[in-house]
Length: 394
Ligand SMILES: NC(=O)c1ccc[n+]([C@@H]2O[C@H](COP(=O)([O-])OP(=O)(O)OC[C@H]3O[C@@H](n4cnc5c(N)ncnc54)[C@H](O)[C@@H]3O)[C@@H](O)[C@H]2O)c1
Image (cartoon, rainbow, N blue to C red; front, side, top):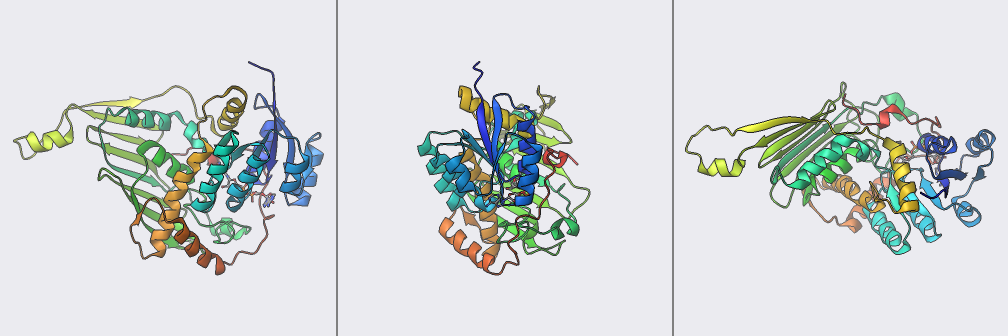
């Protein structure tokens, strides 16, 4: 192992960026040091400088890229800047770790992915829940093919309860112009990503998104997505910020068995014969199929944000394989973009790949009516990774 260190810059030291900054500044990420940060909030920046001697500060991202000497940039600003900032940093020769979601619009992500590919730099995205061993195990089982073809999948992820006070705190959140969406874009991207990571991408998306069902907001706080896959399998994804107590339950039904992930337990039913075979060969009207039941307890714990930061560092220093490559950001965003488009087109079934030009046109109509008042500075800066960003089962 070499003793080299990656000099890292962070743009956006609000809620998330300040937690990354503190973690790196305290030396918790071996091989990574914090060299500079950028934020448009001058007061926050000056306070940061006092508390973090030796870290350079910038009020402009372009200036930081021009004058700074970081090897890598972490992007933790509102979503709508993500792809643009990633492109700029990659073009200036920086490795990039972008926060989730990859952007607001898939068309921007397609562009950033092309720039990343050409740059030869490491490009990663912060899908920290991929580090939970239970999801990795579920993925491994499905990819191995031992449970046969996917038949259906359902994810209920409603443990995102938020109050009106949360939405009233203002800033860019929960507006079409500031954030670009609601629960599907802010809270649920982790699960949308894990869903496609485990079950694959569907062929089409139909959605029912309720704008301000439980809160006085202009974006959705409740959504149901129906997916159809190439082999005819179907999926349902249910999310909300208005229900309490919430549920976090993933079920994946396959031809030769089933997986259920709930309450921190991965349960598996493995059938002795495929359902499709018994269905057509059994002479009984009501039959069952013998199965083996097991509960998986994979080694390791969820390493979360620090795990992704370490993986990003090791990818730069030693070529370690990325847990969440930046280019993967396109998948979950395609699901949420398609869900919005379905809603805007009277719940039409949206075939993938998405018509990104049409999506951008429809989103721009929403942006025109948005109540967003440009004030990015209304946010917390709490310097700690919040428990609410980890996988929660209740
Ligand atoms: N991975 C996770 O678990 C997780 C958790 C929370 C937030 N996030 C993501 O992190 C991103 C930031 O969210 P947040 O909660 O920290 O928001 P925030 O509003 O608390 O912080 C954003 C910061 O960016 C600064 N900023 C805005 N525009 C800027 C610009 N043009 N140049 C420089 N600085 C600018 C703001 O002043 C603010 O300090 C979002 O995309 C969000 O989805 C990820």
